[in-house]
Length: 394
Ligand SMILES: [Zn+2]
Image (cartoon, rainbow, N blue to C red):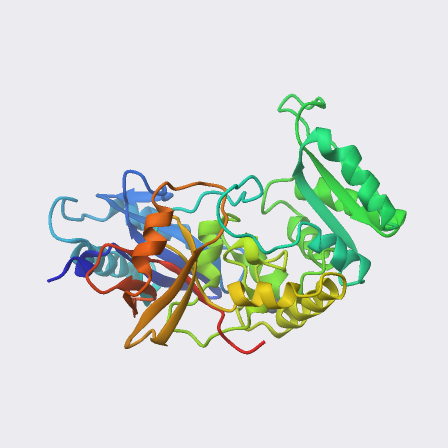
């Protein structure tokens, strides 16, 4: 067997009891990886998305049952066999509690993605205009812009730029743990066309600081999503995803490859190429495609040639590989039967991997194919668990 046969895999499963239904992942626990909420003998389970009723208390037994399983020692057997064993033992235990467990798909298992912060990146390509959200606000495609993590020393410059466009800005001060304002820290800015919208957004912001699941938080999230211009279908799915970090969103929202190529307008895996500020409910979400295309037109109106440059990078197969490197690939051929990588460009990200340039050079000319929902290269040594195919029509 080649090395490619030993890629770490995980199982996507659905648990169901009456009207409560939830997607989960069954993963091998790696020392340097994520920390699942329930672990047993080197296997872990992670909630992914509520499918039925949002209240998943009817399903808390799935965690208890998993912890009680008598599984073979972690040193015994390979990962695929251990996953299969854990799955069947767990399914049998849940059946006794009237909970149904079914396999949704196998998938390549990737690293936990670091929180996206590509603004400080000095390497890699970025094609997202810094002010794309202000452009959307001025064009009436949204009613509020929220700028998080603005360094305190930039606030006055930003305020001047925003007010030049006839927009109003309000600073929402960050607070320390003790509750007092700390002038040295970064702040959140709210921008709108009028004062009453700013007031509503400020009140929603306060509500959103409450713990997830608290009364009114879901309603506030949906209303804030509407002010931010996010399509309701996308906000609804976002509120069902178990945790709002990049890894969980990618697992919940990205289908395995091969999938039908989507428009570049919905690209969200790489923030540095994204025009949308939200994670679309589906790569083919019609409302998101329409919003993205409107933004291309608005930007092109003041920056001729923007669209061609952005499309040349974005209408590609976008991947995050097993080391967390972000790459935009052009390929020739079918991903299912094997395609040749003809270009691999490094996309900006918050982390700088010293190997990424060598990785990009190594990939060009190699044969890539889909493997349990991700991509692997012939000969092994590289795989990409997170993949979004954006070569579709725009
Ligand atoms: Zn949507």
